[in-house]
Image 1: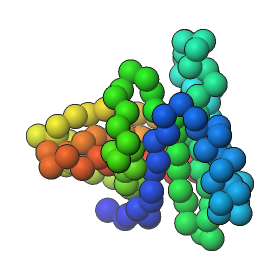
Image 2: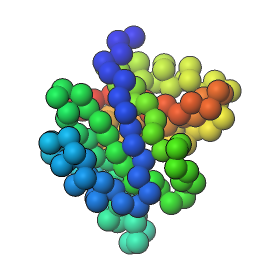
Image 3: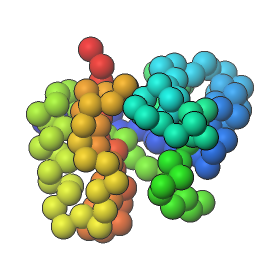
Image 4: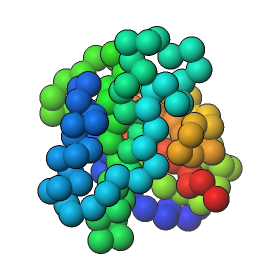
Length: 138
């Protein structure tokens, strides 16, 4: 398996668009590949359409990502930053997801295609560490 990157992923509580502006200014960069819930979630409830599903920043060659918390999941300050693992292929993503999911505390999102990745999954392993597995768009 080729690990392309380990990145910071921030989960924001309903203020994602505001956070994008803040981090653009703080890190002197522009958000890339911004996807709202309306763009990435078929049949998105109207009250959630404005929320950020995924935004990516390039900070001197290092990617940082953020999204708004989906209100169906609990939000806890201090537990809203995870590691995003970027691998080369869907097959590698599946292998890594399967390994980290063994005896997992929670599978928040099974591995699947999403607007920013052909294979994305979110799992909290048996030790309480949350991992977001991704492959990059070609």
